[in-house]
Image (tube, rainbow, N blue to C red):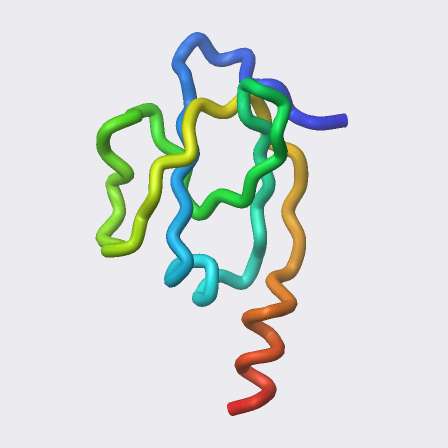
Length: 81
């Protein structure tokens, strides 16, 4: 069963392609509209990602955590090096 954000504070998702390529895991959250999205950062701010990634993009308000899995793309690129 997925974790629901019972916290009173809202959570927001952000994604960076560069961060995703460097991450060992892919993390999926559900947006308020029901869409599943990959995120690289979760914050309580919709204006500040609190990261240094220069390609960070705001996704929106999130409802709850869905899943996490190994980042196959990252593993493939490591094996190719």
